[in-house]
Image 1: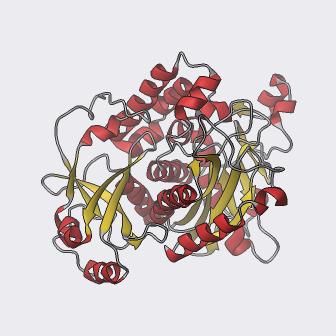
Image 2: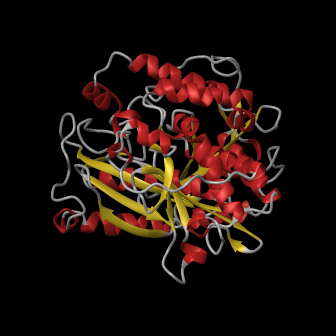
Image 3: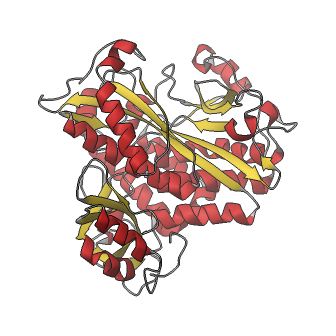
Length: 459
């Protein structure tokens, strides 16, 4: 569905899915889309209307393309303002009953214009186009978002952690056992394969990893995981936030992107003569991502609050360099154990967070990687240790550069990226820049504590 250029004339095999939802007791279906500020927006329809909506869509204003995370609307060169209307069309291949919300189902939506054509700035379609572009080059991608979130008490003013105990500690897990069991059961019932769950470093923080999937499904899974986390947390009297920072003096929450590249010979992440065993397609793809990282920050961590998290020596990945199992580099290569490399070897991009639209992020990372493949790029030497321990002269000699340190700086890097401008197209490229620069202006006078408080519960 995500690759279609026009609204389908009929729901096809979706009739069976609708019947399954009816047997599951579903009464309402929410259709979600994610705006360029990373906020998931929704429309809901009764189940009895789902077949009609799948064929004709439901209306939604294109003004959301330039909404900020604070719900303030601005106008860009191409998008924004009060005019026009779109049709949200659910992907019935992904519709699923919500295990923790009885009577409800969820489906990701694609955006079309009133005449039935694909909307030029549909982020889900952008991810699908980039996935198809990889396929045209004989490449298959597998991706997954690693989720970190913080739990706060819903009955408290401000932020009060819902759990305590040492980072990664058993004491912290002991207060989470029922919650974790229920959450994992919810996700498995919704066909999201969970890999692991554990307490994390920051106050009240936990993490969950899911299995890799094709890129569009990986972005769908990211939306569904966050939705499921928030609803299950609420049932325990907690508020869950995927915001990058709740405490500017402490570690923040990321949304690390894992990826692997495959061709007709198997995984391009192992078995080669390149660094860390990379074969040429894998190395070139990662080199392309590495080259575009400053611009990708505007896509994946471009809100002003993101830079409360993006600090050196916090494993946030603020350096434009790569290493093998090096957690301070923005690009971390994970080789896997001997005998597992064919399915386990992957790369992790660490500088992203929950402010990103996952479709936009995944599509942009693919575009950057494919540009590297087309140019036959090679990786520089890997980095070990913490680049912050090196003086600027030694950093420069090693080719290590700091990623943007502000929302404005990241937006400038995105504006200058010919690769991402071409991939996104003028409408989507300008809309992202419009949102990020407007958010930066509105947050300019906030001190770190005020910024963290203002953005704490937006994602």
